[in-house]
Image (cartoon, rainbow over all chains, first blue to last red; front, side, top):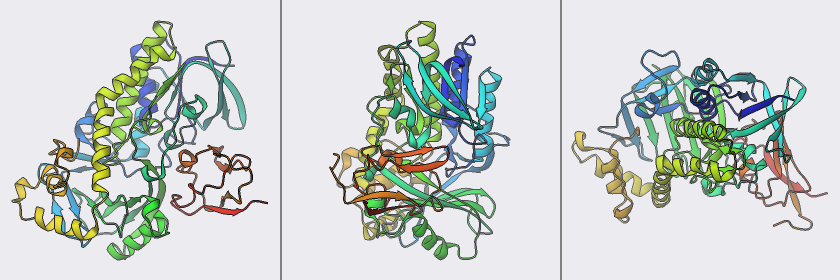
Amino acid sequence: MPDVDILVVGAGPAGAVAAWQAKLAAPELDVVLLERDRAVGAPVRCAEGVGDAGLREFANPDGADWVSRRITDVILESPDDTQVVLANSGIGWILDRTRFDAYLAAQAAAAGAAVLVGAEATAMSRNGDERWHVRVTERGREDLYRARIVIGADGVETMVGRWAGLDTRVPARDMESCAQYVLQGIDFNPNAIYLQFSNAIAPGGYAWIFPKGVGIANVGLGLVALKTNGHNARQYLDDWVARRFPSGVRTGYTVGGVIVHTTIKKTYADGVLVAGDAAHMINPLSGGGINNAMKAGRLAGCTAAAALREHDTTERRLASYHKAWMEVLGEDHLKYYRLKQALEHMDDAFLNSLARTVNKVVPEKRTLGRVLTHAMIKHPLLIPVVARFFV
Amino acid sequence: MRRVTPDTIAVVDLAVCDRCGLCLPLCPPEALHLELNILTVDDAACTGCEKCVAPCPVGALAMVAYA
């Protein structure tokens, strides 16, 4: 029965950074990072886009082999394919998540954490010894880990949160059902990401083209099932791709859920912290979650390390993690969530006229803030002070 | 929340399911489980609410008459 200080469940960006930062903060602790799949970073369930500033808090993308493409432009598209090229959108990156996640896990390992792949936590319980007993299946063998703190970074399914008694359920209106192809041999600007908003193409979400290279892109969409005509995300994507890129070669596909909800009410319990997608820490407006997950992972890792040094893993002690998260990004996400709700009511005719209105603004002033200002004529109080896309 | 005898319950087509886990947090009674790469429905817990069906990106979930 392995005895560890911190057991991190899930080796995505949240979990890998949590293990890494916990070990940096308190090298004497035993930290184990579990990955259910056979390889860290695979399968990719992500469009792989990330903003520059947030990324650089954790890793330097310049010349890194885990980067697919540097992005300098954002192009918004209306339902009738009118394009709005955003000014001052900032710099972004399209990652190679299989390499990026492995890079982060390697940082955790270099700091002294143990990384186990093909190791799945299947249950956990609290047994009165102030430890969580976590059942872990690895290559058909079952082990019982005893952990003083478990960090749940187990993504959209968030079983750790469920086992710890936290409410991690999502209302149907706040779940984006996503499907994506890797398309090759297609024509687009490889320095730009494209986002198309249309209730006919991706109701309640948007369709995207995120370049991985010249002629190669992640082409996908997310939608809210309550708003569809009965088809699923993959069928909507097939329709869109057939129209936009009929000759594109599909060299990969992925599907998954993006939770566009606010952070769960409680991200901690006795001996438990939940981080990243598992705690609904995705930007509810953009659907972006990688930088948020790393920031949450850092907070979780540092909080866990400090709590263990103080010999206090009660939920009272761990509540500081939740407070810190809400101050860093949680409160912003509440604002983005309200903005998302207001934008949900725009129909395709309005979106088409919005694109034409914004295109009358001189190009250098065509910022995201300006687009939202025009979109939110009826809700001026909701306009946030965002001028850049990649935040 | 639990109906005494639901008329229908959810079933998974494992040949279609991509194991993405999207449906788990949508299930009010937490009747869906993804363990060792297999999605299962806990028949005793499923209330037949159907909230998992439409959001599945590949259409792997459906409702069937409760036997």
